[in-house]
Every structure is written in structure tokens, then in C-alpha cells.
Length: 324
Image 1: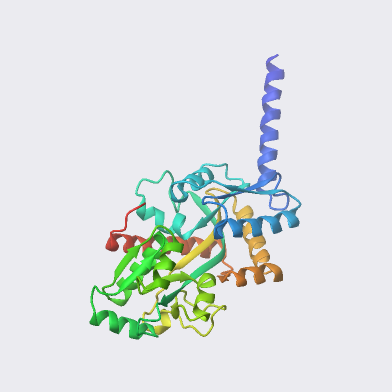
Image 2: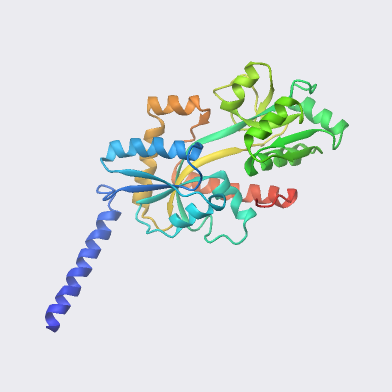
């Protein structure tokens, strides 16, 4: 009887070891459906990108990829689920600037460590802003804007429709050394409407959403917030090249796995994401939505997140922005 129990235990250990080896083998991975947790509400950019990548991944690997929307607490609920999931590559999260760049400063008691509890895979897309002004504001360049703001300290108004856009405006104010009044609205639609009506003068708007308004003459494009010009409006300069060196602000979206996920699996996922975002139909879709495509390695993405946490921590501290 003792011998039978002993052999049973040995057999169970061998089976467990075999399963772990199979999971860790990038040739056999994935061995069951993959879940991509989207920590924000359906219909947004993170949801869109997760579904695009998940669909292509499922086609390539003949394995189901499920997109699981788990919104709550500004992304914290969904991120916690993934941080505490088995590190086998079958549960991922579509992280964002908000969840993995800003929340660490807004919420000092997160139920996970933003950097150490995740294994970055790759950014899928980056959505930058375009700084636009109401046509009544007599500026056409960043330099003219800064000069006017300096001559009228505390008079110029700037709308924001969320924590990322608000902090982007705070970063511009801090970087350019100007005194403008940032007016927060409950949602991007209200912030844009306030700028269109002339209630406020400026906003960092989404490039895809702002392009038709700019073309119609309802808003005036001043500069884009990325380090490189946008393919959607290549004639509009960046803030950085317009007199505020090093300025960069926007929203990135990327896949992360739980920490301790085998490097072989992280690398395989990275190669697959990089392949997918370069497919002609995917690239066309992302470009139409004004996404830049970074093509990160896991190491580059990890370094980017660490730098992002530090950058936004400084802005949050100086601005005094609080969690909603």
C-alpha cells in the first residue's frame, strides 16, 4: 500500500513536471485558450487593439483567444487579475499609459507592483494627441502659444477630458514654463465640445477624432504630442521640434503577462505581436485610427514603462492631480 501511494505521488509529480515543461516550451505553447484581459470598458482603444491582436493570434496558433473586459477602479481590477494569475502565458493584460504609467502615482496602495509584478511583451499601438486651438485664439505655432501665454499669465484656458489628457496638459505647462488654467471635464466629448464652442481655448485632442474638425476649420492644429510626426497629419510639427525639446505625451497600449512568465514564452508572444501589427490589413487599420506602431522588444517595453512611471510621477506631484 505504501509502495502504491509512493508511486502515485511520483507519477503525479512527473505529470506536473511534464505539464510545466510543455507550458514553458515555446514550440508547444499555447496549450489551451489564451485570455487577454482588457481592464477598461468595451469599445475603447484598448478593447479594439486586444480584439485585433487576439483574432490574428487565434488564426495563427489555431487556439482560441478570449478578450475579457474587466473594467473597474481605473483599470486596477483587471490588472490585479493578471498580476495574480499563473505565469504561464495564458492570461495577459492590455495595459495602458493609465494602468502602467500613471496609476502608480495616483494610487499609492495598489494591490500589485506596476513594474515588478508584470512581464512586458510589446506595445501594440501608441495614440498621440494633437494640440488644437479654437480659431479665435491668435496663435498658429507652439512658440506663438508660449509667447501669448507668458504675456497673459493665468488667463488662457485648456480643457481636458480624462486623467491622461489632463496630465499631458500639465506636462506641457510645466515643460513650456507657462501659466494656463486647465479645466477638467467629465469625458472627452464634453471637453471637445467646450473647445469647439470657444468656452476654452485649447485641448490635446485625439488625432483621428480631431482631423475632420481641423479640416473643417472648426479647430486649428498647433502641434502633435509624439516624438515623431503623425502619418495622419504629417504637415503638423511635433511639440518637441517646435520649441519644447523632449516633450512626449500620449496613450500607449501594450500586452503584459504575469511576472515570472518564462522568457521563451514572452519572446514568442513578442514575435507574434510584432508580426501581427505589420500585417498589411492590420497596419492599414491602425494607421486609419491614427495609431503609431512601436515594434518593441520586451526589454525596450520594460524600460519604457519604468521611464513612464518616473515621468508621470513628477507631473502628478507638481500638478496635485488626484485620482477620480
